[in-house]
Amino acid sequence: GQTVVALTRRGKYLLASLSSGETLLMHLGMSGSFRVVREGRTLRGPRARDSHDHVVFHMSSGRSVVFNDPRRFGVMDLIRPGQLQHHPVLSALGPEPLSDDFDAAGLARACAGKRTSLKAALLDQRAVAGLGNIYASEALHVARLSPRRRASILATPGGAPREAAHRLTEAIKHVLLKAIARQARGRYGDERFLVYDREDELCSRKGCAGTIRRGAQGGRSTFSCPVCQR
Ligand SMILES: [Zn+2]
Image (cartoon, rainbow, N blue to C red; front, side):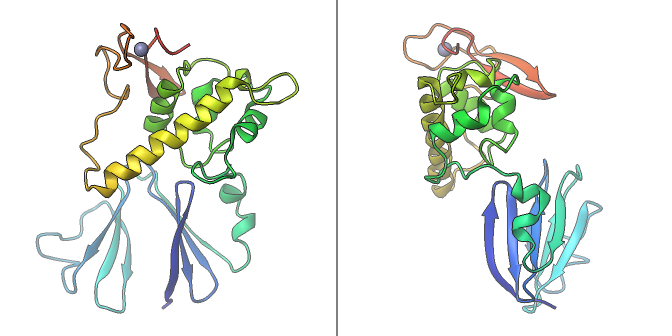
């Protein structure tokens, strides 16, 4: 067995540092979750194993930590000591959105010359780490940018940040801080969004008479207001 020395996060990856020097990398995918099961409850009782329990960690306390993932997009990988920085998924990640490393200049540099859409650039994880479908849509609404605009519009031909890059950087930090504050109040799961899942509703922006539209980009739903997001 190994002792978990620290639990950290990078982008959407959970990282458990082990006493062996190895790191257990975990990603919840679309539907993954962990639950803690008391001693003896693993195989029977009200929270018995189900067919979507894919990994079970047996802890020294007698409890089990069970990874459940119905859609099986989750990932686990055991990384050898010293190899964490070189792991292909981690070395490609952009800066953490709430760190000082993430700023308009960096976002513009990452998007300069990119012919993909702004939405795709935000989900790509290389320009910024950890942003998912919901908060990418929300941030673009706050920044008044259409998800379908080209990512390259954030930068001047020389790669310097345009005003839109500053707006989008601030919007990303804003929507994430708001979501974390809501979660801290124990209200995760019942949140209502500005545009996400609000198809055909009136835009919530003051003075905007637009209606939220739903579209698809790269196989994912995109929600935006065609009036105030340009
Ligand atoms: Zn609007």
